[in-house]
Image (cartoon, rainbow, N blue to C red; front, top):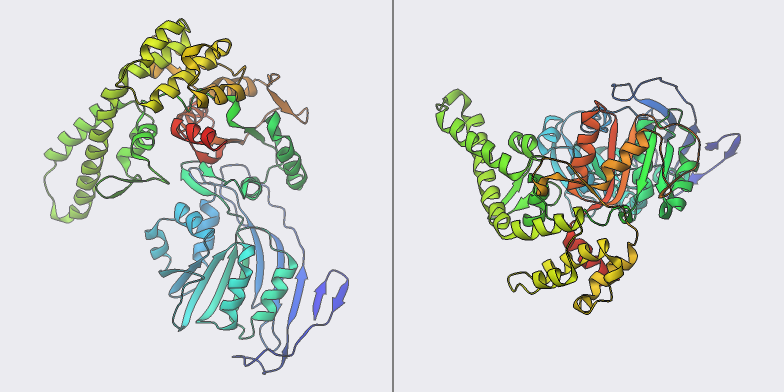
Length: 529
């Protein structure tokens, strides 16, 4: 019997096949109930899960509570807002466990949960839903999948290879999907199904990639985890997305602020050379999801990286020298051999990264200073820039980038003969006319004094001063928590946002993006256009 609200439908599975605990011909019962338990919590505090939706799919002659369906909403811990939720998720199931992923959930879960944490929670095998696998009866299988992977889940349940299944969906699941699962679970192996509302890849502390195709799902999973219906501030090109979010987020009770910006609000920052450790690793070594490859693959998750990622390369060099000295002085203690080995590996890793980066620093020092002077002072004439562009040591890419910066500051000079052959730069500048100009701090080396536009934008928003470049759909005042979405963000902006809030002792913020970019991405995007 399928019960939905006040309506009752009878469904009979006539071809169920044999079942471990039920007759060959059996009926499936899907009971759906909706209930809400209001739990008042504040941002940043741990809370018990909110059970907002409960359903059960129960074959006859089994425990009615055998198959529970729970939508989990918990409030965040810092560094990863999903940490409390993930702790509950990984604790589900008893005994030795196997994890199955689809192509969507594998990068998501691997970015949030270290391999060692999976092992501590008794997971010993990690495979894809589409992999060919052998039977392992008696083990618990935990499936992490998006609702669109229902076909693969159905195939798994029709020929189950494990004794018990727990299913976690990344987002809201339709009743039709649950019914399909109920019909397919002829061996009564599925014990629990959850909506976990985690659809973003963690890139760094409080920095998440929502993904272009699943942008709305990613943003909504963050808002639902925080439980906020936010005041929304956005650039003009985001109006359609803002309207959709207003509809979906209206059910949440808490207040907050969602700031949505597209790349056009600051075309300068992706173009300038970077001089801080994390952005330089990305620019010169092409790091991806905290992983970088030189002679071998390195993971950027050690203490030295965390302490130095926002610092300039000169400070990192000094800290690295101190790291070397400290490591050499520490005597080898057999009882702490594992820690000493990890420390040595961390030191060797950062020495290699540093040496690679320093080579680029020498090559780019002069051109970087020219870029900054154009942006700050804008006193270079067309003849002077032409002389710089005649330097044969500069690559075609460097010249194009320099022309972009110059024409952003001097759009009226686009038709000068010296710039005619730089078609990419011409196209780029046409799309970013009247862009806000970044500011510079005083009494600091010009290469380090650069402040991305996002700093001044956030400063105005926190004072409730919203200028004409942004739009808002309500008269509410801005409030914590702050969710900042920039479609194409740079590591320089990630650093600027993080330091902006830290300097004001604000910990309640989350940064979202579609991707991390630098000037090479900007050039490639224009080439595609």
